[in-house]
Each structure stands twice: as structure tokens, then as C-alpha cells.
Amino acid sequence: MSHSARLSNSYSGDWEVYVVSSGVPSLNWPEHDFGHSAPVPTLAERTEALAGLGYEATDGAAWQWQELHSDATARVRLLAALDVRPIGGAS
Image (cartoon, rainbow, N blue to C red):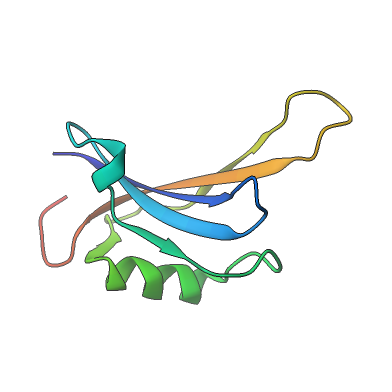
């Protein structure tokens, strides 16, 4: 089963990380709310949050960032993704 962690500044502006698991309904995805809108959570904060959810980065994985916006004047949302696995599990 593949897993992808997603870091997003939600529409409310707060940062959250959640783990997308194929074949699992989104309501059941593990998630962590950082409870702040700025600054972007550090790599250490993201790693700690994922560990609290029971996940770690796969070997060689790096956060991939993209901007999401509806038009040139809209507030930009950021989304990052990282391949993860259960702690102690195989990739």
C-alpha cells in the first residue's frame, strides 16, 4: 500500500499534515494540525508530526512543493508531498 504525506496551508490558513493512503477513505487519513498559519512548519516539526502519526519518510524521499491558486489575484495555497511508510516498515 502506498502512502503520501501532504502538507498544506488550509483555507483557514493553518498548516496541517495528513497521510493519504490508497484504498482508505479520506475521513480515515491520519492528520496533524500545527495550529498556526505562519511560519511554514520546519522539517523537524514535520518529521515529529509524521512520527506521531506513525510514519517516516521513505529512503531518499524529499518534500516536493507546488502552488495552488485559482487566478493571479487569489491567495496562494501551498501544498507539499512526501513519500512515507509506517515507522519500521518497508517502503
